[in-house]
Amino acid sequence: MNDKRKFYLTTPIYYVNDHPHIGHAYTTILADVLARYHRTAGMDTFFLTGLDEHGQKVQQAADQRKVTPQEHCDSMAPHFLDLWEKLHIKYDDFIRTTEPRHKTVVQEVLQKVYDAGDIYHGEYGGFYCVGCERFYTEKELEDGNCPQHQKPLEYITEKNYYFRMGKYQQQLIDYIRDNPDFIQPEHRQNEILGFLRQELGDLCISRPKSRMSWGIDLPFDDDYVTYVWFDALLNYVTGPGYHADSQQFEKWWPADYHLIGKDILTTHAVYWPTMLFAAGIPQPKTIFAHGWWLTADTKMSKSLGNIVNPLDLIDQFGVDPVRYYLMREMVLGQDANFSVESFVKRYNSDLANDFGNLLSRVSKLIGKNFDGIIPSPGEYTEAENEVLTAAGEIDGKLQNLIEQLRLNEAIEETLQLIRGVNRYLEQTAPWKLVKEDRAAAGRVLYTAAEALRIGAVLLNPVMPNRTAVVMKTLGASSFDLTWGGLPAGNKLQAHEALFPRIDLKKQARKKPAASKPVNVITIDDFAKVELKTAEVLAAEKVEGADRLLKLQIAIAEERRQIVAGIAQFYQPEELIGKFIVVVYNLQPVKIRGIESQGMLLAAKRKKKLSLVVLDNPEVGSGASIS
Ligand code: MSP
Image (cartoon, rainbow, N blue to C red):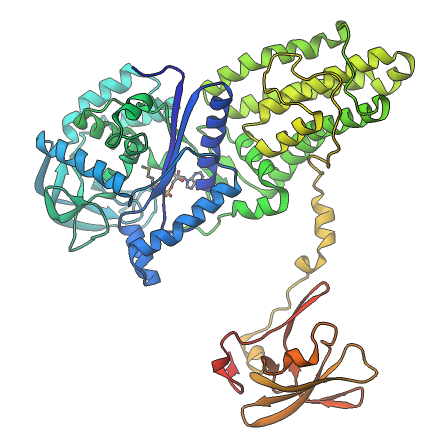
């Protein structure tokens, strides 16, 4: 029997042909937020994510780097794991399809389906797209191009193994009709039902090793490896223990949500369910396809080269604001446009002005008027009604919205509560009230502080760190949403501004160097500059000049002397033996009466300086630099 209180959700497993990007980060944050909401609601939660390590794309990426596919996968996995750590992703299991536990499951399922007669050997021809790792029929092409990648496709025929997917067409149509939650949002369900109006062919599930060997061996013919999608989709059952632990598997399966992007809908809503029918495994409850993050209305994708690395925003503004933005801005199921401007706008309005401001008001007013001790509310009056009612209703509202994956609306509801509290503070003006009626001011400030705690609890799945700061500041430990969880008498802790306002103009002014126009030169201009490597033979300070060092250098057989303004950064003796880079054909000049025959190269930022030196001294002096 399945436990009603369990919640199992998955992300797609990501290809390791390149570094993670915003598309990967988005689905994984979304899953993390949902998992956290469900954990907070007391549900037993299992959140699975991982990597899709087989197939042609990965093999090609490894070939390009001249490493084995396994070495390639092993070197890519840490990039994903590091990013998940940085993004505070609390997954329960991380699966890699090259793990033995997964190979066992794939081979077991293949054998089962083969034995049941649903896999046969035959010849097939089709248009193969390496990017999608799948065959297309002629009808599916757009002007002869792959509908996803808009690139011409090659027609390939070969002997392969086929899964009788077509046999399950009617069963799938009936299943989708009988289970309206199976494919979400609804327009995606219609898309799949539309797709299923055409005859569903069989699915080629093998690749001859002669063409592509990076995959899991077919258990019944080791001249072939398994098609990467047949392998990858099964991760969803490997994770909860399909082969290894039937009790665990019974507990978690079927998945409550497979979260995916809209580009991988067919594989999830057609291939996967028919595979499960054939293997006799129950269907997942919901396959939910979200839209794409676009930039200037174009999909952010590696092949288009327009990916904004989420890490860049994180380093500048912190993890939580980025998580907040991604969750607040996308209406699940639709595409969303990403821009730094919209990020800053959202940050300033919701986080700095509303949420951050409420914390700073509450802590300042309690600090100033009540010695930092949270006052007791006493008897509530009419004035508190609106706040108390809103806070009392919000849990139910949010549960409803989250059940329907209307996450952006759930966040907006929480912000409405917070804005309501800010309004309440303006109306009641405790900074004035305290002079006339100290108890009334105490009641107002308790009300605001408790509503703030509730807001922080509700936003905790989205922003686990910053909300923890709010809780710590209030001295609150209860994540219960019942009113009154904040004990009066707590001593407020000091805190930094929760969300300092971002002023893009100020930032631009602060960094004039970044916006300095680039002085473009031609290759011919550059060819005039001769750069050579040189060995430092001797160095000494120039008397009477704090900043200058006089260096004797060797450029192959030639000896020269140069004067350089690096005395504040290097001691003369530490330079000896270093191989540096000098401008060889610079007209000699006299500096403080000392001849300088050339100039050395150094990198400078603010008060730091580093010489450009050879990291392979075997190159030696006198080498030209191009
Ligand atoms: N390996 C397959 C999935 C196998 S699941 C059994 C795969 N991997 S992927 O790395 O290419 O992409 C994974 C996910 O990233 C897809 O769900 C895709 O929709 C998502 N995104 C890639 N770019 C995206 C955006 N610009 N915006 C949002 N998500 C997008 O496909």
